[in-house]
Length: 196
Length: 196
DNA sequence: CGAATGACAGATTTCAATATCTGTCATTCG
DNA sequence: CGAATGACAGATATTGAAATCTGTCATTCG
Image (cartoon, rainbow over all chains, first blue to last red; front, side, top):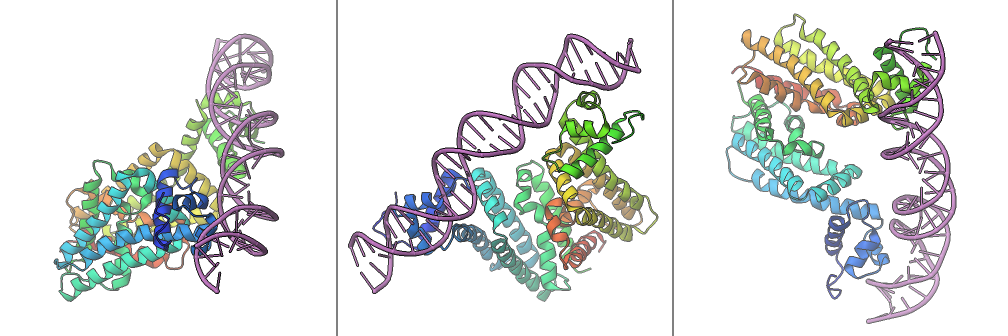
């Protein structure tokens, strides 16, 4: 399946794992399948990942980190803070909506995986609220945001927009009124950050 | 079980249904159980509710309406709009948190039921956002809120506080930092409604 | 000698036979 | 005569035996 001559890196195993998940779905994806896809015995996979749970957690982290990376580009950009925050929230919504819409089965698979790997999800949420904190701080420094506790407010911004990034709401993301609902919530939140 | 002399009203059947749900849980609660609890044959239950699904939907609606009624008292009260809105959101959070904390198994049961009765849930959300619209309108009339589209903003307020009323977040309601998180989101949203 | 293998025990999943439940309706009961 | 019953057919759920999978480790391979 994959060139057996190449070194067996964790990354190659994770790639094969995602492929197996895509092919068979979460419920039927076994470690034996991953090993077969790589042309090795399943004992070899266990040499790199101590348990099946560890393998699943690693592939989940990889998936979450891809979104974090996209948003980091927005965070480190040079936009004006209010525009940047709006852009960041829109980019998060867009990323999630496309993942859900482009390959619904794989999205469902990763939804199951995130549900069983809350530690990885908590770390991901920490990454994202960290980026939000940076944007808010920039806004406070330039006098365009008025914020008490930066980290607490970043968390509040993240939680108040949950409808547009939490996978439990994925079924609603394809509704025609979703963009309007996103604008309503985003505008309300941005108004809440603006100095009087 | 129940006095067989009394007339068999839909309300009595729903009471018995809730009792059976509490005793057996959603998965094992059958129409036969409900009939047995009432001391009648299951055919008689089918005389009042066309299907088991209709019975489940009715008992779900009854459960949701109890919360709506509590909040209606706040909505029709005489508080100042900003205080009333904060009070309303806190009452909603409190009602849900207590339902989840006081009888977790029954709460899980109703979570399953709401998931399979989205029509009843949509109606419930319509009721609640209707109440929010009334509070916002009051605030606009008194000049303490600045709102474009009343209904859209009511919906935005409801969605942005989902962390504190959507059952999917129930596991987080008992965390020690939940009240602080509630305050952060509520304050952010209220600031977003205030005129500049 | 370190990386890979595959046989193995215990845990988990699958599958098909069996039991229970849903929804109907001809009949009974008050 | 209208409300309640319970036997019934088809649908759904339960159960336990068989198959598969996870994780280990003594052995093999390069």
